[in-house]
Image (cartoon, rainbow over all chains, first blue to last red; front, side, top):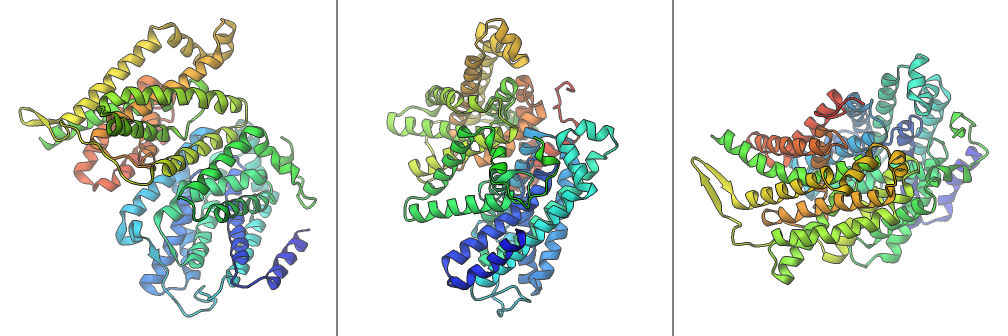
Amino acid sequence: MPVAAIAAALIVPLGLDGDGYAIRVIALVFLFAALGQSWNIVGGLANQISLGHAAFFGIGAYTSTRLLIDFGLSPWFGMLAGGVLGGAAAALISLPTMRLRGHYFALATLAFGEVMRVVANAWTGLTGGPVGISVPYSAPGLWMLSFKGTLPFYYLNLTALVGVTAVFVGIRRSAFGYRLQAVREDANAAEVVGVDTARIKIQAAVISGALTAMLGTLYAQMNFFFDPDAVFGAAPISVRIALIAIVGGIGTAAGPILGAILIVSLEEIANVLLSGQVAGLSNLVYGLILIAVIMIQPHGLVALGPVFRRPWRVPAVDAAK
Amino acid sequence: MALIQAILDGVMIGGVYAVISIGLTLVFGVMGIVNFAQAEFLMLGMFIAWFAWAKLGLDPLVGAFLAFALVFLLGLAVQHWLVRRVMRAPEVAQIFLTVGLLIVLENAALLAFGSDFRSVSTPYQTAALRLGPLFVSVPYLAAFAMSALSGLGLWWFLRVSWFGRAMRATAQDPMAARLSGIDVDRMRRLAFGLGVGLSAFGGAVILPYLTVYPTVGSQFVVLMFTVVVLGGLGSVAGAVVGGLAVGVIQSLSGLVFPIQLQNLVLFVVFIAVLAVRPEGLLGKAR
């Protein structure tokens, strides 16, 4: 099944305009599915609901762009550097917050993302501030991650999604993954049977933060231009990433992919239908749909996953709810 | 002397911070839910006060009562129609309900009022009282006095009135409260209404020295979280201490750091408290 899905994704662009709108939307779906998948490592396996993943995403976007502007360094190196910084930031924020659960953890991570946004807006020398920053033009080519059309990003994002999903599935099947899931089911019980819960939560956060930062580089290269609110924002990034993983089925490999298809296309439809209207309308609709989904299925936000359950899903501990 | 002046300013601002954050802690104490949209109710309060000033000629300090009343009613409705239904739902649903509310309120305000920055002009806006070598800005003092007043009102309500005692009983043990004949749903409605109403009231009284715009709430998110975490989430007395502490910290850090980085300083305090005393400075270990 996954092979068929990947094959389909490889063939689809052949029937579409390589620079067209559809390609761009699907490329975005892949990127956000990959982000949801990296969130899933902490949020899904350990049930630590982070609302601050934009912090890592923004670190990645700014690190590679800054290195490209100042040193002409290839974004591939920028991506690695961003990954290291993102992982370091995740470790730093995890140390004081890993003991927190539920609302408390969500609150702490949201504050972390917001502070990063405020600092990025204030530190104009580094980030360009609210005016934003442009990714400098380089001769097209894979080495500088710079292309004329959107199609190469379609394939790059697809590769990233497959890669991050492989990491997620690999972790979930490993002893490390089972420890994380033990923490989710009952942290005290996990501690009693000898799981170093603090340590594995930090390790998971570092992996998740590093992957999220690396995806930030892809986003920067694909968009040419961004500002602190776009990459560090709570609603456009942090909440969206978490929502994508949750709506599709938290803790499952297929979840973020289905969630991204659902949410990103919903947003695009809202944008197309309501574009030209006053600012804020499509976001308002987005918020209303979010509330409506929770009202109709208060237990279902998590339970929506099994509805879409696919045969390739590995039956793991998370099936027991 | 600059130091004493900064502490004095900090206490003045901190009093307001206490009031706007009490709502967050009250709702958490009674229902165990963090209202991520709390700062948007503050934004609504600021807008109500602004319109009361622009259309009715009311001073924001008077408009604050209107802001409290309207947002209180809105809070009752939100609790009844939305929050009540996720009380037993998984935490994820609770978190995303209030996050959804945040997105809706912020963008509804953007649609309704546009993205303009609005401010009021009052006769006392630039006035200051002289206390020996120190100065007290009148708008700060007025906001502080109004906050202290509403804080006292809340204290009376929670300590003395039957409703308040019933609300505290609900917070302590909803089942026992229900068995003693308390309408728990009603108490929760009241707590939510009061909580968001107080934030709106706080937003209105600071309008004389601030500007209002649809995303103003995001300026207060980190601040509110820091206040309630300092005082211990769920503790009203803690929020007062936390608010004053945050005001003073912010004011003192203003002596050293540029104003944009004050949120960073607050965040460091916030994380430090979480790391060392997650139950808050006054809280009992749970």
